[in-house]
Image (cartoon, rainbow, N blue to C red; front, side, top):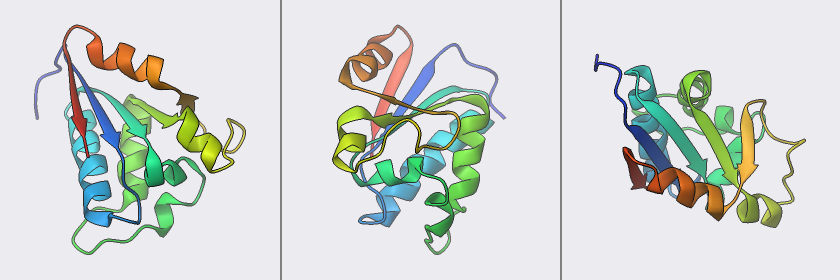
Amino acid sequence: MLAVMARTLVVKATAGADAPERCAQAFTVAATAAAAGVSVSLWLTGESTWFALPGRAQSFELPHSAPLAELLHVILATGTVTACTQCAARRDIDSGDVIPGVRIAGAAVFVEETMAEGAQALVY
């Protein structure tokens, strides 16, 4: 395992079931970093916003990939998960709909996180 690091990894998932490999890569990288002790912030945007809802991650399947629900659980246990404000609104998702621990926030918060000292951003 990696030693606890002072850096933060901000991962933006832009794909959901529409591009399953890209989606799974974002969740896998975020969960792997979280499990290694890295501070992680996962952003759900575009079609990945649906995974902010209860039961949606459980329905995602991709051969040879860890179950998305398990990856999400790892990230939520130690990091933050954010659904994009505009993406959520386009899908009629509000704060009362999402999994406990998921917040809804917009571009200003994303920019703040990615511009913080020690932050590394990845977009999938």
